[in-house]
Image (cartoon, rainbow, N blue to C red):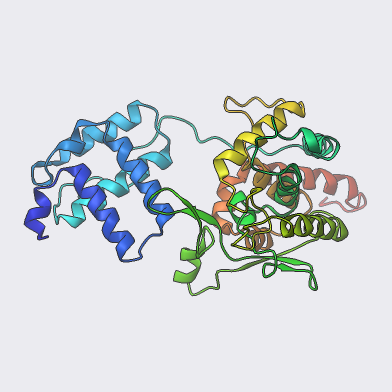
Length: 351
């Protein structure tokens, strides 16, 4: 298709064509493709989506961004919209966005601080799942075993791993019992049809490979909890997973019929468990599974683990960690200074 023909596409068609080409050229993976289609769907709510590319002018694009600011979109969402429209314009070789930069339009909603469980809330959650294993599901029709649910939550709190990473672990190749380490090489993702598959990379794998780094993480069992506790959990799960028929992907954590566990279904289970455990957070959407990562990172900071080491363990860059956990780092610094005040030599004085 020529550049001229691209100009005859609507913005929505051009954005979708651009994403198809990026997927074909392996510039993005299938999960990123699906996420980008969701962004395109949100842009389709605005009239600009049906304008022909060759007719679009700068003011049309500005009106679109004003719309997203007005509906209280997050800064992240506004930047995704920018990337989609800009990508479509480049595909069609149309210069209608030269005066609009990625940070020209700023969200009017404040960025939310990440919320982690306090130590007491973490104890409350662990006490509940340990003492109520057979009450972790609503009914016997659940396709995820209660032991699997309990152990996923424990491993998430102990390592800071994402649910998709935990649920893609190979029970024979990703658990190094000799060196007491978990090897993270992949995560669950979705194909272009929306089916759950085991990805070829971790969530940050493409960036690592682009930087010439190996896309593997090694998480010691003893990062936050006793090494023997983690060993026992993994051994228990191995025995349980070995009894599951049709476990074709050799998964350590899977459904009762050997299939992948979806993040959305597990998140729903986790929300309900937190309610039943009596954890009352001031959250409109309630607890969510990603809080286990926030909690693990918070405990690592509190335990004095250097941020570069935390980055290597959880697979998030130091820069992003500093931005995301800024308030937690600030609290940690204040607490450390308080300790310093108590311990400092009172005989030493500048005067």
